[in-house]
Amino acid sequence: MGFGGRPDHYDAYVEDFSIFQMADGSKVAEFRENPTKTRLGGLRNPTHRSPQQMWSTDRGKQGPVKLFEVWLDYQPDVLKKSGPFYLTIISRPTSNTWYSKTRMGQHRIGQIMKSVGSCLPPESNKKITNHSMRKTVVAKLKNAGQPRHKIIQVTGHARESSLDDYDEVTVSERRE
Image (tube, rainbow, N blue to C red; front, side, top):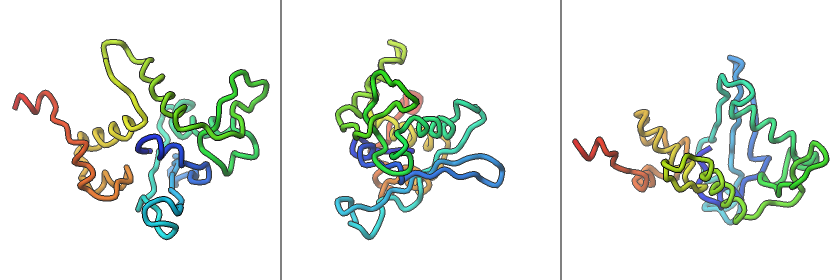
């Protein structure tokens, strides 16, 4: 979804997401940030002008929308439609509910991404953070030749100048 750092993840709620089917039969998971009094613009305006979307792929059971639906199935029944997006993991679940009704802390959310990085081959030597996902989305869209105004619609940046922080020169560009 192109979320920023831990606060974006921590502030996400299940009701901010919806899943719908397109005319061609594919599914889309959409994130529409609900305004809060502490977000820029107050209760009047949501931060993102256009919805952030995740499209189904041809991977079937492992497509991003399908995995999102499966993840929701493991939530406590009372929190499947509304409540915090990230919930505390039950270490040894005894039922089809894998998460407690308690919100996961920001520190723990940050630790999850670090543990994902430990699954990468040692030679990759990459540091993975919550913000890495957003940076990857921006880089992939730039490499695909997408214009900056479209990239900010996907990532939810407030203005095109915010993308300047993501500009990196590749090795081949340096050689040129």
